[in-house]
Amino acid sequence: MKRFFHSVTLAAAVFSGAAASAPAIDPFGGLGYRERLLIHFDHLPVPRLEAQVLACDRSSRIRMMGFEEGALCAMAWDALLKRHFGGDVNALLAWWRTESLRTGGD
Image 1 (tube, helix red, strand yellow):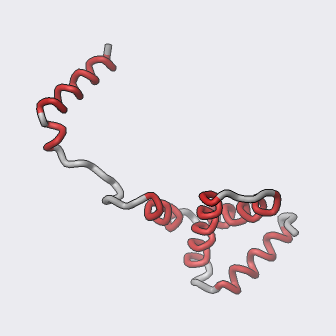
Image 2 (image 1 turned 135 degrees about the vertical axis):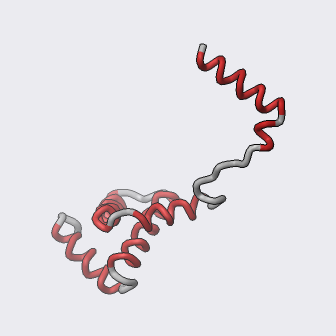
């Protein structure tokens, strides 16, 4: 009964024009999917970013990643590079090599 009531209320609002006059609420301010993901990665704790980068490394060693999965891994890599290594690619590569060996990578 509740679901029916909500449907009728929504239909009444649409037909009365109330829904058209109400402002749309977008918590991301109209940002696209890519921009929302970048914001998400920019707010992840560094240990989560590290874990994500290492998980991507492990996955890429055993199978071919799809475009979207590879893009997400690249975003995690870039966020870690910027936030934890201050843009120093050599420092990130040194960390990755050490962690990869420590966790059983090639």
